[in-house]
Every structure is written in C-alpha cells, then in structure tokens.
Image (cartoon, rainbow, N blue to C red):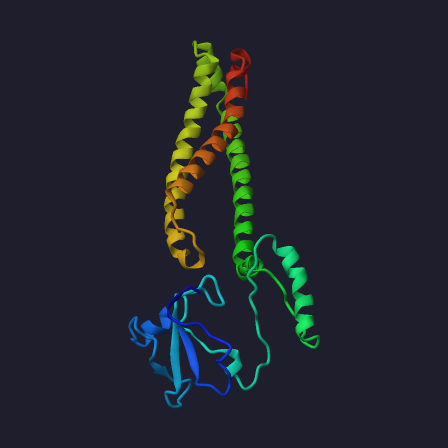
Length: 262
C-alpha cells in the first residue's frame, strides 16, 4: 500500500512502546479526519485515545476483490499480546515458483516450530476469490453456445418446413420464369426479417437484464456496445447459414415435380 504521509512500522514498535497505528483513506473519510491524519489519536474499542496514527496509506483491496475498500487501521503485530496466526506477504522478482519453494526453508531456519499453511501467490488468491464468478461466466458462455446451436437447428427446421409447404408455390414461380437465385433471395429475405425481429427483441431484453444484473458483475459493464454488435453479427451469420440450406434446396426444385407435389 503506497504511503501517503507519515511512516511505516519499525522494529521499535513493540509491546512496551507507545501504541501506534496506520490508517487508510476510507478510515480518514469515515471519521472526518481529513488528509492530515498523522499525529492524531484513536482508540480501539471504547477505551481512551491512546493509539497514535503514525502513517496514512492509500486504499487497497482487503479481503474481497469485488467489495468496496472498507475503513481500515493497522497495528504492528509486535504490540499484540497474543498472536494466534499471521499472514505474511513476500515480494520477489522473477518466477514465483522458485520463491514459493524457498519460503519453507527460510522460515525453518528462523524457527523450525512455525508451521506454514496455505502458501500461494497473490494472483492465485485473487483467482480463488472470484472462483464463483469465473464458474458462472464459464457456464454462461457454455449455455450461450448451446442456445446458439439450438437457435440454428430450430431456424433450419422452421425454414425447411416452410419450404416444403411452399414447394408447389416455388415450382410455379420457377415455371413462370423465376431462376434459382431469385428463389434463394426470397427464402433468405424471410430469414433476414426473422433475424431483425429476433435481434431487436434480444438486444432490448439483454440491455434490461444486464442492468438488473449489474451488481453481480465484477469489473464488467452491464452493457457493452461492442459486445452487442459482435453478438448481432454472429447471430446473423448463424441465421443465414441455417437458412441457406433450405434456400438452396428450394432453388433446386424441378417445376414439374413441384407442381405435382402434395
């Protein structure tokens, strides 16, 4: 956490020395301390104001990456009468794997009776913190792909049935001079109208559902124009691909066979 003013903890901040603390920006804002907080006093609980604020640091994420930064004050562990467990952060350069392997040996040289538990990197900690969000996003993407596939199959089935119902009409058109390209355009025009109507309904629904789900999204916008545009383009290509096969079959209809079709 970058230090704005004051000092950090030192080895002299022990149990017998004056009580000190470092506070963050959210703490200063909550208690209306302003920016000049160094030198002021606070209390832990309902006791007297016997803790001097010696440092002022910027806000930083605490235990949850999605939550707002809470008001925090920090005390040196050397001034704690009882220490049950502690979490240490080690900063290093280069690959984290060799650094992780060296930590137990270093701690063992300091005190072989100190157990080390849950050793991990900070990126790993962040990934575990948003595991549920990542799982939901993966499931959402999978369901979206499945929905796209079902939409393509459904559109193909509807158009294939429509073409079969209009076989005599198509044959009559071709007997009167309509070529295959015109028949294909007629079928694909129907696909285009279905796509436009579906896109309008889908984009409108996605916009309002996105706004309703905004609180569940971490560092994501509920409405991204680029994502919406890309989705519309992809769905349009899927719709045209699903509609081209029935359109192609319709353009290959033999007029005489179509006129005798029941």
